[in-house]
Amino acid sequence: MRLAQLSERSGVPAATIKYYLREQLMPPGRRITATQAEYGDDHLRRLRLVRALIQVGKMPVATARQVLAAVEDESLDQNMRLGAAVRALPHGPEPDEDDPATVIARQEVGLLMERLGWSECRDVGDSSPAWRTLVAAVAALARLGYPCDAGHLAPYARSAAQLAVADLDLVEEFTTPLEQVEAAVALTVLYEPVLLSLRRLAEAEESNRRFGAGG
Amino acid sequence: MRLAQLSERSGVPAATIKYYLREQLMPPGRRITATQAEYGDDHLRRLRLVRALIQVGKMPVATARQVLAAVEDESLDQNMRLGAAVRALPHGPEPDEDDPATVIARQEVGLLMERLGWSECRDVGDSSPAWRTLVAAVAALARLGYPCDAGHLAPYARSAAQLAVADLDLVEEFTTPLEQVEAAVALTVLYEPVLLSLRRLAEAEESNRRFGAGG
Image (cartoon, rainbow over the protein chains, first blue to last red):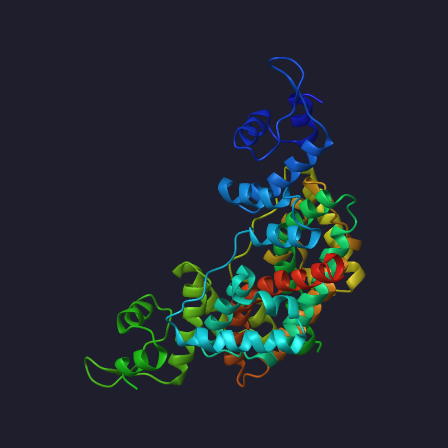
């Protein structure tokens, strides 16, 4: 298809597609004349991922480019490629190493991984951005005196493990390795607000059950 | 205790406490002389909540004030007070009513609530900010052509229901109704980054299990 058609089928304005091409967020089309190029379904799919990262995930172009570089890195096996792509996504705040609460948090996170038998994560440890975000978030709880020991974190981790099964089931609905990595990245970003809003709705249900007038 | 002690015990600088007092994010101390006031454990607790909202949750002062007004509203029963306080928290984007994907999303969210028997949420529906955020998030998935029907959303909702049980168990560790509402608000905010980072770590475990070299 031509650029105009790609724009029509994706709903993305032609000028925006040209910008993504210039920024190398998408591979160029197959050149057919000096001024025209041909685009395929892989371009349509990539456009969808770029929109997920930039428009929904509010990611800077440079970050999106790093994520896409990991997505495309065929030198890695599927597990490492998935890991590299998700690690390139933006993360929460870094732990404050001058804060004594960070020491407590790092200990509890380590204990939690031990208890759950998350050996992959334990091995990677602090070099994983998600691990560091978790340490920073647990440190914030510790600093403010809210419950945040491994025992209190465990039910959250067990729910997260179930979520990961749902995530990877979704990913495996896609066929080729490239499509799977693209989907893993997009769905990690796009399902975060789904999850947070479902949690608040579920809290309302549970609160009504426990404290409601009919309860 | 005096302001200096409140600052020492909370780790919040005295100038910041004075600012919170001026902005009416905390009730004034009990005046003992023309220039000095006495503060209690309730001030210490409130300070912790204000820090959770403003420093960790990055909330504007005006939003934090609204949340606190709901926390303090004793005219409501415990369930309504919890609901009002969580609804006053910042939420994700609003649905775009001009987008056909929003129509699909609203339908799937309604179907999901029906299937799960979340009758409290279904009754409140679109007037709940978490519901509207969910509709907007599902619409983003629909617009980009990613799976987002009630069937695909159901495992996420079931995990959210388990998270809500963990959340309310935590809340019920606190004694008085006021402490419980304060904790519910703080923990809703503070556990979001915990949850999102645990999900990414669990994804790495699950990906290693499915695609890893040893798998």
